[in-house]
Image 1 (cartoon, rainbow, N blue to C red):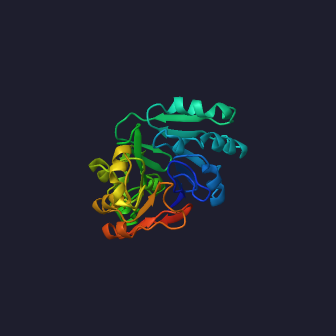
Image 2 (image 1 turned 90 degrees about the vertical axis):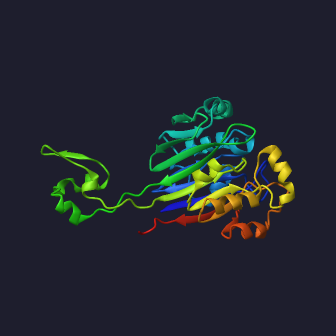
Image 3 (image 1 turned 135 degrees about the vertical axis):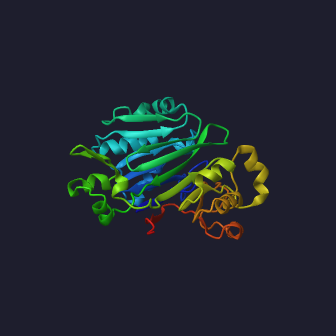
Length: 303
């Protein structure tokens, strides 16, 4: 199962009761963070999932409301006694941006590993997280992300026996590894059933909707997407600055056949106590206005 927390829902600047947009994912005890604006470590503290097992930070782009919380978070991670490397992923210029931000936190006792993306769609694996990054239109280089957790096919004892697979190598084959044993090669398909559906969560802010984005988020269990304004009269403004309306996010969710949409990255002009998404729900019924530290657990589906 995959735990997801929307750490904050604000865009542009933090408010006293609305932190900046960031998402935290937890799988098998390890964590992945997308974006790290000012105050991210504060809302992480309020959440209570801890810091030490954070392995990956992905950046959508390098505007201040998405990156300036990094130095403080690194110092907090250092105070936990962390020694494991931390992987940082982001658009071109990642190393330069991080080196500039971390002048005040360069004495951390763990390695920072940089995965600087080229400005094209690409997929990579870090631990149990399978990450796809897609360039999206904003006024600086920006990426949307999909994170997936794959699930191995079911181990079939009868199939293993029919294929005369020695029992001592069952475990390795079940984990997806091919094994040479006593001069014969055994492959996972000799003991495994059909492919099983994994978990897919998509995250997109600070961009306009595109066909490529719709394709990438297709079939997501959860789409977390910018809905900067809930009033369509702001369309010309969001087009100018390359943002997205709540109604556009709902249309994207509908066309991509996602299961649930959480809106986020709200304008500071929107109220913090209640955001009316009734118009968006007319487009995509399973639309929810995100709130700080909203959480969900997504289970693997049984075939």
